[in-house]
Length: 261
Image 1 (cartoon, helix red, strand yellow):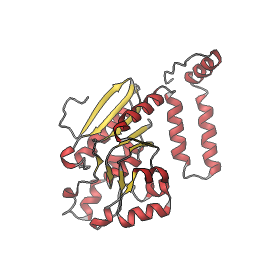
Image 2: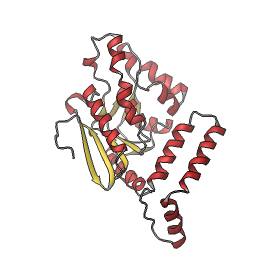
Image 3: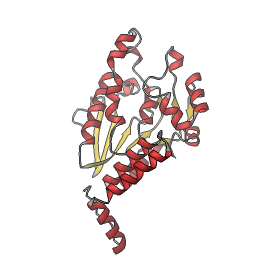
Image 4: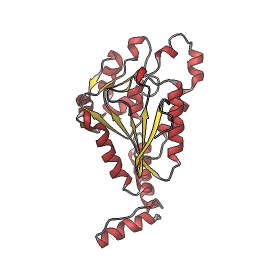
């Protein structure tokens, strides 16, 4: 665990291959202050280059994942200052992280919290979780992916309803809409996320990274282009030791030992 428990983001390494990043501003419902965003970006940048990490779990508290942006830091500022903050640069290491990322969501993920969860590759939500883009209620709109990633996740009409009304949707509705990958009892959220992370960490990491890269690169590309990316990535993996090990282990009916080479 991170040495300083007062930091806005805590890093934990519960077992081999897995890193847990925990949002840690309970006094502010994990509102995404600039300091929190900067530390989160730093951690993601470092974990992306850490060969011992094969999967990252991002979580908040038992009652709240993240309440969104820090409104007190935005209320009195003008557009030039907002522009100069370039928060997209802070979110870039999360967006471009090559390792699989799982968001473990308990309680509410509102505004920036919902946008942060959508940057993950999988979202494990508790039955009591809520997802919301409430920015319209304070005179603005989602500004870090809430209009674009949301429509890609749930479709135009559901995204329109969430963004135009600012009303939350339940974890069950988010699961039905395709925003959430796993719906579990609240007390099982982190354990389930760690179980999935453990399963992913046991897989060949080069294959996992290529799968993530191709899915994200191909989702908005023409089908023929996406299929070409897939074929080339698949062929590339045949140069890895893990491919040889995986197929030989299958033939020999034994567990494979993947090294990421």
